[in-house]
Image (cartoon, rainbow, N blue to C red; front, side, top):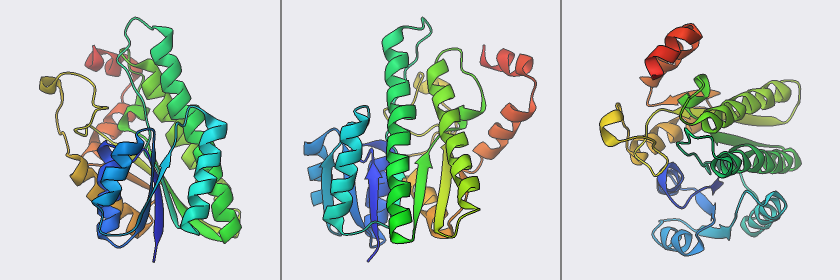
Length: 242
């Protein structure tokens, strides 16, 4: 029996992936701030579910809750970090920027390092981080969000490079979604194109997990957008975004 922990499992991609993995036979540990919602989701899964209340902005408490969840489950093969925050913040108000950094950078790193410690202790595992195509450019309306996702993508790349020199078999997958129909989607509906459902995103992520891919765009067509954003001069990208 394979076991997975999903941090940020109370909605969006995290919830959809919990359902996808459970349908595939995984026992699932659900972690997020909303315990009642996690309990309801867990009761609907076909396999055994474990629930842990976790606020990743309190990094010490989050790491302790993660360790307790691992202990309750016995051992974990897969950890998915899907918790995220983001705000349209054209006026550069401090609180939205601070929350984004606390969740997407500090919280992400706290759980990623805890997961790597666990995998080292058990001799292997699989870490999956949900980044974003937003990592590929600076967003004038949400600078902290895009910058924080660039951190996530680069940090996971660093972990892969680190792992290449070690004997422990730990797979590390970076997921960069485009627009997914979740609470995190920014902008008006008319502004969103190529929008995927959380279920479609979860199915493609689950496929990448099975294949132990290093990197996946969700949906795959976003690879073209990422290439464009990376290849074009900043001045042209700025015009496209304006």
